[in-house]
Image 1: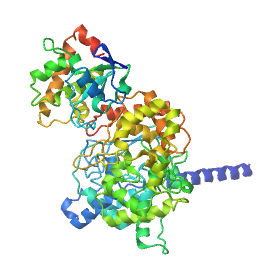
Image 2 (image 1 turned 30 degrees about the horizontal axis):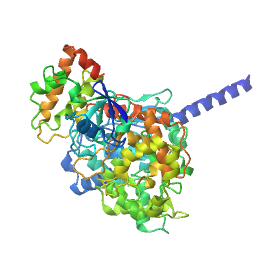
Image 3 (image 1 turned 180 degrees about the vertical axis):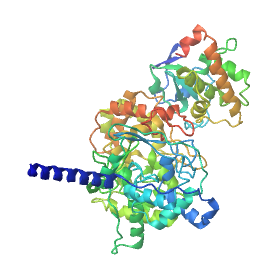
Length: 449
Length: 165
């Protein structure tokens, strides 16, 4: 009797303690709403700094729908758990962050909790933003709070159970969110440290370039070994890089600043937006990122020059193996890609292309299908898409030929499936259109050329 | 020899497989509606329809279209019996110099064949690739909307149904 009472008491105490622990883990208080601060209340210099930081953080890329208003949200981010829609981060008081005090903004950046106390999904990369300094958060807040307020209610996420329950995110954070993962390294230069701070923090390069585990968290042991971004392969940017000519700090800086490099080709897909933003930030920050990332890439065991890489392309055997692919290449691609002209009138020699030597064929297929659209007001690279003029079999034949002629890598498997998937994921782009607050027809597809 | 089906007719073409479709259409078949604009697939003046899709014929070699159905503006209608898209462009006076118009019409036609009620945003998105130096864009947009209406309310002539399939 007494014994069972004791056991009952212990169980009850455990339940209460467990419930308290669960509440402590999940529950976050709301932060009191404020009246939207007038734009004049922010220092212009702080707003300007915030604009540069927002460009470094690539905020507009996820928080803006193509053709829509800046920062008004509504873009679907495809995840294995369903689609998550970005939110409105303009200072609209009802549908944006107009009533958020700076403290709430900083909490969201550091711990992924919104003003009302709800856990935010880690598609908002607070696992990186947690490294951003309070000073930089202040500038970002000043910049966002002085943007044009846009009325655009958040679209409900399309997540499967149990991922649609926000308390699940609290458990995710317990497992994967580490505060202060970035520490300055006093043995390295100031610019290396600045680059590390940006790359690991606001620029959140690993969010795409690091593979994720089954629960969608970056695998820290595999940092920068290649990941996913909206149906594109984000290349490995460490020692596993597929680039035929090794990257170095100078090449990285030029590429990140200009969107292309003669030894590597053109940034496209989701990376196009990144370099477009980096064209508008202080040169010293791009330089710092390049210095740090060159260290992450590491020096190649056997460095090869551009000339050596181009000379290695072995046309004879590949042509015999796939005469149809060879004929398509010669008739369709070579006039630009073997012209030796600079962009936009010539394409890169394909022996230099990471898309051909990477383990994943999607980027090459995406680019053959959709091409590269010109950017308004810039002398940008261009390429027409061939999705309408080439059938799946013709594209597969071409891609096989390119792989065997220009690389020493094994043939890609299941190419026809990859091509069909790529056509499907690009229908949103080809059909275009979505009004300012809506998203592409297929919510899983983000439409980037 | 390459067998090429254009506007419902088969042709035997002697040109090499790497010859751009545009050159075959204009120089060999004397179908001059499709225009040479930039030669880089960036202006849209050379657009024709291949198996229902708008294709830039200046960057499409002959070997890619063997066995496929090619439709040019000449295949849509005649002076006596213009197709709805042609009527609509005339009625809206959408052409100024007219150089871009054949390409505009072909892409609009391909759009309307798969989507008979496009929104303005869809029309704009579709035609965004096409350059018009005269600036008649608003008339072109009106013409595409008018064509959508005509196609919705009028029957295509049997000959046209064959060629635009």
